[in-house]
Image: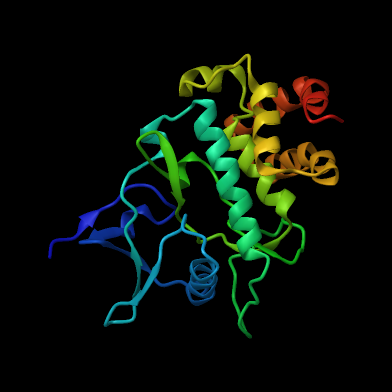
Length: 237
């Protein structure tokens, strides 16, 4: 069966589709991620690839292929899609809360991430979300999964899905500029975010931005500074 090269992901040049499976290079953390994905499946969380195994050469992991288009292609910017994403993130966190990592687990840890007990995706955004018929179906590319806090995961998710980008970047991507505060509140309400998490959310967005260095993130940082009071008010702060 012919292999189809897939775009996207941090190792995109090495990710292929073969039939109903996706083949990716095995990494030191792959076995740990497989344990997490198997737990999510057993917990009833359906919005993630399933682990099929490894290839005969033991060089590639084999995951189920999730049909659809990632968010960069799907361009699903309506409120219903945002609410669905928030609901999926909450379901993910609830399912992951009962995961016990196997002894000797290895994770691709972000040195800037705070320690925490919850196994999070840590790279939630449209590029790592598969959409079908305008609605998010699954989160892919779990290479950065690692234990941290829910708010660290959420800080990146709201920045990417609302999104909390600069006006020029929102316009370039087709997102509404004048509804960021409203959409931020919508995401948090759909997730069921409590008071303590809401209070910590914008600081988490800022911390994740401070861990990166690019013209894009600098524009986002400036926008966060300028809109801090407005967005904090939307969160009830």
